[in-house]
Every structure is written in structure tokens, then in C-alpha cells.
Amino acid sequence: MYAIVDIETTGSHPDSNGITEIAIVLHNGKEIEGRYETLINPQYKIPPYITYLTGISNEDVAAAPDFSEVAPRIFNLLNNRIFIAHNVNFDYTFVRHNLIQQGYAWMPKKLCTLKLSRKAFPGLSKYGLAHLCKTFEIPVVNRHRAGGDADATAILFQKILDAGGEKLIKDFLKKDNHEQILPANLSKENIDKLPYVPGVYYFHNAKGKIIYVGKAKNLKHRVLSHFTGLNTGKKRQEFLRNIYEVTFTECPTEFTAFILESIEIKKYWPEYNFSQKRAEQFYAIYMFEDSAGFMRLAIDKKRKYSEPVASFAYLADAHRLLWKIVKEFELHPALCFLQKQLYIPSDIDPVVYNEKVMLAVKYLQQNLGTFAIVESPATGNQKSCVLVENGKFYGMGLLPQNNESFDSIHLKNYLTVYPENEMIRTLVKSYAQKNAINVIKID
Image (cartoon, rainbow, N blue to C red; front, side, top):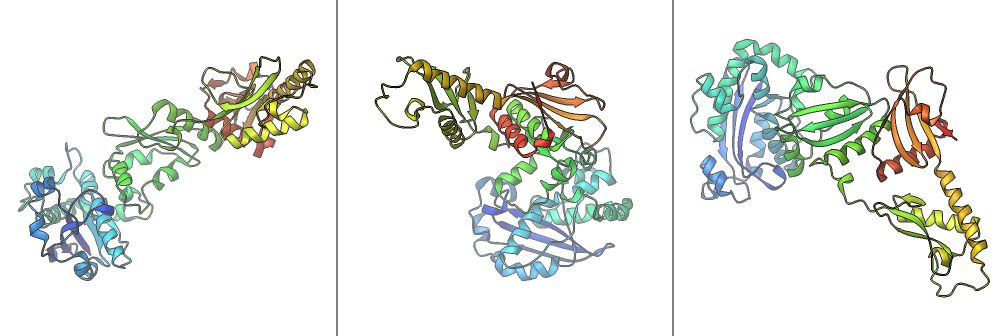
């Protein structure tokens, strides 16, 4: 039992647009057994370009029923039937959004005649409804109206059935078939290539440009999770429509995937990545000598082309560590700009004081240190290695299974060098603190 549906709307996303017309063609798998069509008052103004496309004007819908008035009938027609449309996710998202607003719990199985046509009629240059109607000589009365397009889709669906579509439908409706949730422009074959391992994935638009980079503990599960949410917002719907291809890079561990994701976002600056594209505002402890001969430690915003004693993702972390070394090495808070004091006590000897400062700096640098983070990868017998040299991320790669040397010069033979950023530095620091068992210190 099928319900073949087409709708017209005021725009492309249901959060701030309405349905202007809906048509439902009921099909029992052999023939059409019923039909329903109505204009709907969308409670939104219809943009001129939509009127030009569909012929539906604000005057046409002014006296039409609200969706709330026709919702009971629409629900009864759709309930317990497989929902079918051409580019199904668009129609489904609008109808579901409006039914939920009226209190109806409705989550049917779906079929997309666009995706079914690709399987039933391979080799065509296009699979849009207009092109398929022209190819198969399907008559269309009132193109870009719900009734005309629903009737044409019903004829197309019958042609799919006649071309052995029953088996296709069974395959599409299997629980482990992900094709129904995929964006219209993303093929199942593309998803089938994704492995169940850690890695970084890339969404590409129609021109092949990378528009989003993500990390994953399990590439296939994570990529599919993008398409299963019920978010009907404009940004998400636009994002899904722009996904034409997924590529990926396998990583030995989830931790290395985190690092590579940050590197790739900085490299490609994708349109739909937001969190790591904000202007970085990091902080650092700097050392300088003042006019009185005192070595001063100060917290400041991190500057390019400068060598700080230590750097931090958060200002609070910088203050916390500076207070710690002030207490441990008996430094003067005012000389570290932690207290507002105009005059420094005259009994402080700059030479003695500077020795304490240098000991504190040496302590900080030793704490940064050189070390390797070594993990067992998700697959294979090699060892994943991330090298940090003098507190800075150097690179990562795979070590031979029988590797016994952790000299940094030796390790570099197996590692790829990557650019460091503060996000990576924070990731590495956090991971090393929580997973000390995987940290190997290097002299």
C-alpha cells in the first residue's frame, strides 16, 4: 500500500515556510485506488518567483483551508502506507513537520522515485522528474503543481514496478539499507565504500569542493548519522542538498582522527565547519627584561612569530599555571603582573630574582618536554605514534610492530610532519594527561 505525494511550498525549509498545495495518489501496488488534492493556506506570503513557477498566488490560497483543517484527512490517507515522492526527503520533511505540529505521530517507511529510477533505468543522463517524463513520454498536466506532478510520479512508479521494481522496493525497504535516508544527490555506492574504522571524512559539493570535514571513531556510522536527524532548519537542509560525494582518510585511532580533522579544517577552510574557523584567541606566558634589569613573566594574547614560554587555549589556564610557579619558585606576583603594585620592594636583588625566574622557565619547558603517544591501532599490527617535541606537535604515523627505539630521530623516519595549531596542542595535552599509560617520555 503506497501513498504517492507531491507538495508545493513557499520555500525550501519547513521551519519558516508553509505548504501551499498537496496531492496524494493512493496505489495498491497494482493500480491507483484513490486521489486527494487541495490548496492550503500556508500562513506565509508566497514569494513572486514561487508564484511564477507554480502559478499559485497569495489570492489563490487566501480562502484555502489551513493545514490544521486538513491534517486529519491527510494523516488518515498517509497512515499505514509507504510514503513515495520524487526526491522524497523534501516532501517528507514538510509533511512530517506539519503533522507533528498538529499532534500526529507519523514516521512511515519511504521510497524515492528518483533513487528507484537510477536503479531501474541505469545510464540516463538525468533523473529529474521532467527529464524522466520526457524520456518515457509520461504526460504532465499542470507541471509544478502538486496534482500534475503527483500524477506523473504515479505513472513513473508504475513503470518502475513494470521494470522489476518489486525486488528493488524490497531491497530499499530492508532495515540495513541506508539509501532512503541519504541526501538526493549522494549515491548509495559512495556510502558503501566507507569502512567501519576511525578516520576523517569529507563532504564535497557538485563542483567537488570540500564543504565539510569531520572526524569519526567509525566512519560509516558517523557519516550516516548526519542524515538521520529530524532537524528541519534551513542551514541543515541546505547543507544536505549540497552533499554530492563523500571521501575519507582512514586513521589508526580515534585520537589521530581528532588531530587530522583539525589539520584539514585549517587547510581547506570548509563552508560548513564553524567551530574551528573562529578567529583563534589563545594566550601565552612571555618572558622579557624590564628597564630595571628584572626578568618579567607576563600573560598576553598569543602573537604570531613570537616564542612564548608556554601557551594555552584558555586565559584561566594561563593564570592558574603562572600562580603555581610564582608560589613554587617564590617569584613576586607584581613582577608577573598578577598584582597591581606600582613600586617593587627595594630589597629584591635582580640577579637573585632572575635566577629564580630562569629556574621557573626551565621547569615549564621540562614539563612541556618531548614525548611520544603510542597506541594500538583499530586494525593491523603496527603502532600509532604521535610525536611531541619540546612541547610542540611534530607529526604522526605508524611504527613497525617490532619497534623498540623511541629516540626522536629514529621515530621521525616513520612519521609525517604536520603543521601545529593551538587546537592540536590542547588535544595532545588533554590526551596525555588522561592516558599516561600511552605516553613515552623521550630525553
